[in-house]
Length: 260
Image (cartoon, rainbow, N blue to C red; front, side):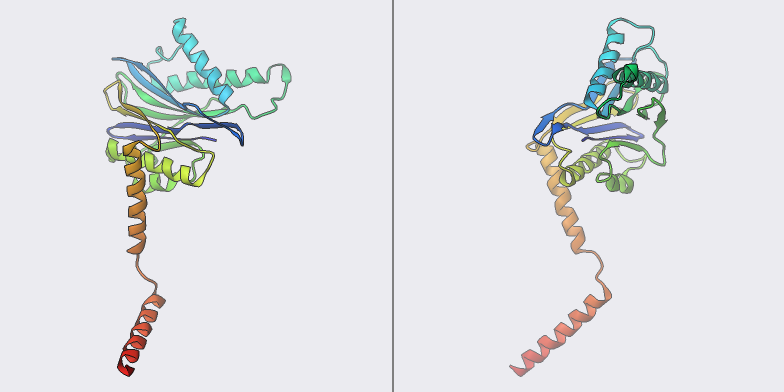
């Protein structure tokens, strides 16, 4: 399984993905699910994927082929990010159809879903979700993030924290907490985490790194989040019956002390 999250804020874009992939219960491997394409001064793109690994690799191969061959349409040619997403969607549909060519039914699910993030010169940064059918939707100011894969465990922190005004670094910390929450609750999502930051109008990667369980920044965010959650729980308001029981306990202790 997979979990990938993309966040769009006023300062730019944050992408975070796990790297666990498995063919069976005892065949667990690490595979990058974030793929970066940077053309300095013109565009900076990042693509995350969830679903069938063979389909994902076929799409990436097609994208690279078109770049190498200077095809009429490639990641470099469209002037709008939405058009880049549509082009990737067409390659995704073609890769899935190839498996079912001749009317054969694939023995496994060959679908993949992707998130495209980035910026083209002259246009605002964007974050788009590409469905297996090739259709595309964009993140909105009301919901400035997109998820694919095992999304439910990491969603609450995004809903509570992420706003367009959230700083890029806070969005990155939130993405790591979202990944960590998912890793703790679902064994099919695992470390290392690939983290990518794209700052608005820079047209290049601001940060790109891989974090494992020994990375100080990941350890610090994970442990601090767990400690502060526990501390917050201890400060939550008490129930009415707790106060009455505390009062009763205090009276009992006072009576016992007087008898002594």
